[in-house]
Length: 127
Image (tube, rainbow, N blue to C red; front, side, top):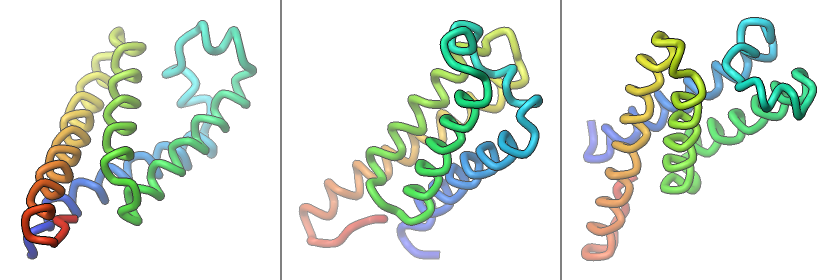
């Protein structure tokens, strides 16, 4: 594997998670609506909330898969996972899984950030 393989593995893994969640929530919305906080469900109809968030997740997955805007995508992934954790603290299973994914998103950001620092010095990009 090349010097950027860790970053590639992280970004593809995160992309898959967001892609899977988007598709699964559209196919089985009843299983996913419980993760949205009640105040959002009071503001928007559930189907609009779910479709809108699924669309956001698909865009985020595409950016990660294709390697576009990686610094921004990794930070958005981390923020998204952090918000999911905060609003689902009563669900230890969700917190347990999403905390690890949050750390993966932050690790990807660090790899990108360090790669940009190195690229400025030698003209080559890490990821």
